[in-house]
Length: 293
Figure 1 (cartoon, one colour):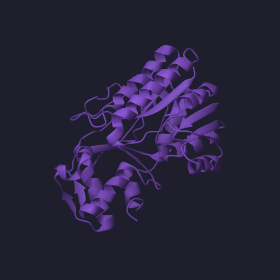
Figure 2 (cartoon, one colour):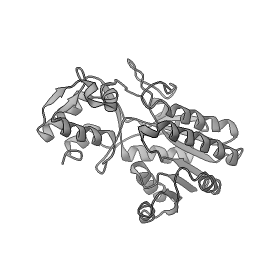
Figure 3 (cartoon, one colour):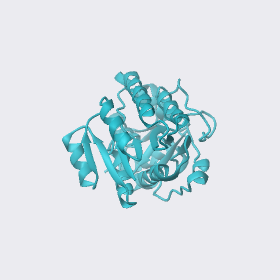
């Protein structure tokens, strides 16, 4: 298959590109800069220069490909609504171009945050929750299935962890902890984050490209929920910072994420596409010092 990827030089995009090429697929990656294009080519893929505003380019590449994977997203809270508006408009154009083709269109999203219970693939994203505006993008992706496109939504947990992670939420948490002078958690710290190792997440995207049915919602969740106090205690042991409960208001936007109980299941995903995660756990990667050295 010829697979077009937005965000091919990013954290998940890099791992997925390697897996796709190893599986015998041809990859073309969208690159925002010459440096990103060079990284993509070093992986053995082709690169085209452009960004998410280049709708004509993206639609053209998606039309030439057998499958498209949409991973690119800039988490700029000052321009969040504008970013979503652009994504939804682009998805409409892709739907027009690929309608009736049966081609795959796979996009990343986040697992639902449902206080008090484990979320499943059948649950909808809360449009009023943290980063809830992305529910509009998720709905637009699933709607492509009604237009004869094999659209698939892969929902990622709060932590997609691994040795080279420098910009994920765990890396951001450790950076914030160093600023605060404490390994922070909220309340009693028993609230949970779901997690997955980068290798397992990439493999699920590969399975989504190759065989997930149209309209599928998949959860890239290896661990349903890791208690944030456990995370803080390992960070404390590795850095010497005291593990202490903090007022979430001290943490700004991060406070709601750190304090939220948001476990998620992947049982339906495993049964649907035969995904069996086998990578290290989040605490394994923290213990290895990947985030604190």
